[in-house]
Length: 311
Image 1 (spheres, rainbow, N blue to C red):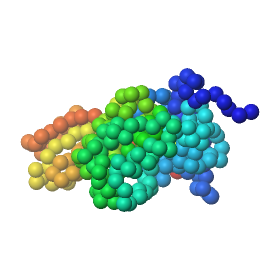
Image 2 (image 1 turned 90 degrees about the vertical axis):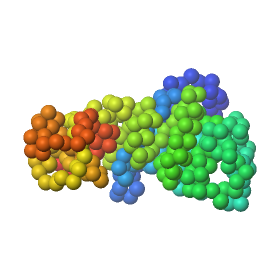
Image 3 (image 1 turned 135 degrees about the horizontal axis):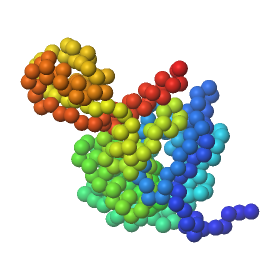
């Protein structure tokens, strides 16, 4: 029997639910028994190394790919149903744009295919394109074209917005404008899911961070919770022309990173590391002690999962 219940008449607390989802491409298992639930109104960052299964997972959420096993539901319906109803907007990595049309014309056309679209003026404002409305799309910079793709994803006023690497190619100003628009959209109760390689963006913008590797979830929580999962602390200081020799042998040190003249030591015993550092080197410039970053946690989680797989 045909489903005649209007989508929005059903009160829902979950926007996306993946239950034991598996997807293979030949001998490659891209997604492996993945379980994931995203609540309505959440802003979630999806992190993972290249080949972790992020894009495949997003493709199944959007109905572009069918799972081999398991179920995918969006607002308790199939992805195809909610996409057809205009409830989902997406900005994918490989989305092309037509040339020869103005930004405002392209957005107006996109709006025309949705049943409850957002006003063009609102789309332009959220995407930070008001000053570019009269410009031809093919004359825009790479970052500006990314903002146009974002505007097209917004055009239908979707309840769920799915973005795959949305700020790739954007300069600092474009990225700042993009995230301001994202926060404004999320503030109205919309659900946002974005995959990114910019871990600082995930930490700053997401209510929850989900880390996947080898096609399954290895961590899920706030940025602070994910960072606490990476044990140890970070000792950083200015190299100031001195040698790197011996730093890896300091008590507690498990990793040494150098960024220009700044040294970063990840340690399991910060007190012992600092004491030995000062004892051996005397004056240390701009010494700082802090917790692990989201990048530290991400590396630890993915490396631990790979070690378990190979054991």
